[in-house]
Image 1 (cartoon, rainbow, N blue to C red):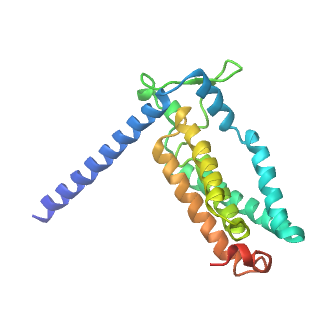
Image 2 (image 1 turned 60 degrees about the horizontal axis):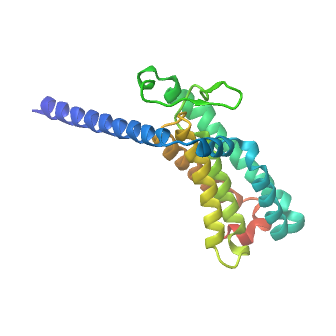
Image 3 (image 1 turned 90 degrees about the horizontal axis):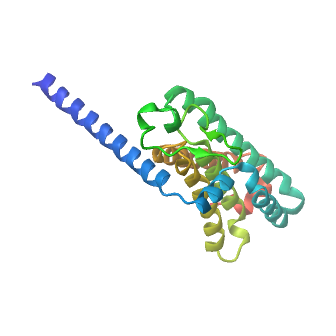
Amino acid sequence: MTTFAAYIITMTFLSIISYIEFIDRELLFLINGAHTPLTDNLFWTATRTASWIPFYILAIFAIWYCYRQKAWRVVLLVILAVCVSDIVSSGIIKPLVHRPRPTHTPELFDRLRFFVRPNGKVYYGGVNSFPSSHAANSTTVAMLLFASLRDSVGKKWPLVLCLASYVLLFSYTRPYLGVHYPSDILMGWLVGLTVSMLIVFWARRTLLAPPLQRGFSA
């Protein structure tokens, strides 16, 4: 009886995993297949970190405006958080899980649309897929910016809208270009959220806390 119950539980678990994987792939095909020349140009531009330099400059200016001479500590904290997020997602989880990207999975090739870059070369991305470092790092940046700026703005919803749009657009480009599954994005958001919360928790209890007292208080 015990063996039979274990068998039923195992098969049920495997069926659930299989169904989740099926949904994950179908969502990928849906996002990846909905393309136009306009969105191709838009999302290829948006997926490149260099395209967001004006946004990062604006964020640094906002931090400087709120913290003045102590702003460099906040900027360093954001950089530290992104480094940790990238190490966790790209340096630890990806090699451990070793999930190939859709562009490196032959059984998906008949339904996957490969993006051709402006230079004529096909964009494959890296090798490992899970989780998305784009999603993890952008979430980390957004959470740290929100934590540091939330008490310095009158209404919070414009800040939330701006940061959420940044994360969603930056993340959406990955399955659109066919280099990540939607589940990679979800896990990336979770990694970014976890890292940013731990960094904020640490910052409030170290020498970084005094200049961040206003923005990082509960």
